[in-house]
Length: 426
Image (cartoon, rainbow, N blue to C red; front, side, top):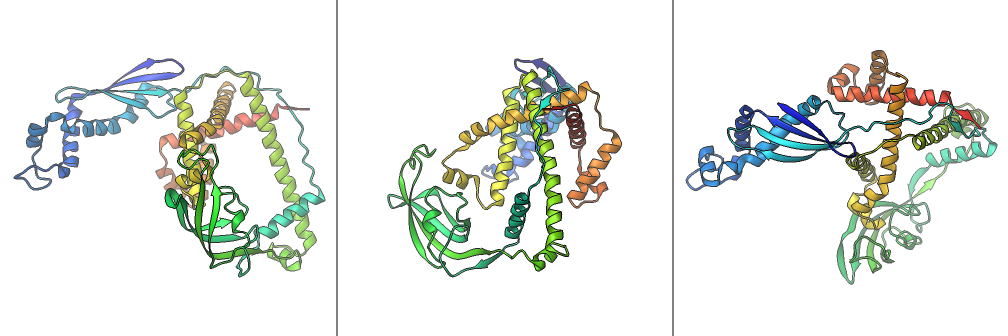
């Protein structure tokens, strides 16, 4: 393998990767074995047409695309390592040459990790945060805990704010159902504002077993032009309604929480709130300090690196939505947005995350903050425990890149500690 590196503008790099010709023929044969079942030629059974016959009829290039995919998949990771470039984005690839008897050549344009010109990172001034806990804070936390322990009970009466209704729904525009407007067995908390404005409000007062029609209007700036500003009708069937039954704050409740008395429980809540406020104060100091360090530092972030971060964040968001029973398509339908709009909304936070990571990594490098092998092993052990796996099996599942990421994260934590230890509160 031969890898040539060409530096482009704005921390982009073009890798030209040449794979020896002796790897091309095996890849073409793999492509033939994978594709032969979908090629039919009279006189031959399905999947039994010889490769030479197929290539004679359709040309040798019939398997080039699949062979190229195989060659890229088998060689790109090694090419990244050989390039010596710290790559921080997905590649944009282009095939330059694929032909029998010749080397396979392709290019990959990628972003490399930008260099950072650090500003002041010691003695950063941050606001002092009040960590005192009031009686009102304690009672408020206890109220939250009571609500978290509330029983969900099926009710026969009217739907009220805070109730959860299990519904089927289908939306109609001018009497015709529209795409993405249908759902079955969906649990909807009234007052959560997860559906289009006016939908949840009209369910208040209805009862389980009822079928109703809700009239709502999509926003004027709705991404789907055919629905923007249009009045629609949702036909809704209400299967069940459940409400919360909140327990009293008494001896039984305190004992359920693991305490001998209500006062002992209150004292524990106060201690926990102090810990939480102190952690929040540290986080606020951290955010403010890093923000100031980023503002005084210089770096040029390639667009491809930002795009990769945006896609990662949206993938995580989609997983969280799925956990709530909503597909991304339904989420966009009900919130009046689309993929491009979501990417644009996510972009500023993606840039901030990248800048923060780059600055912290640069500080760790400047201060020679390197996690030891023992620290990495200890962190991996904690990770294995969180996933309920034996450490040895967890280590087997980890690749070298994942191990390096653990070390990088620990180095970043050391950089944060250094910043906070040297902050000046005002």
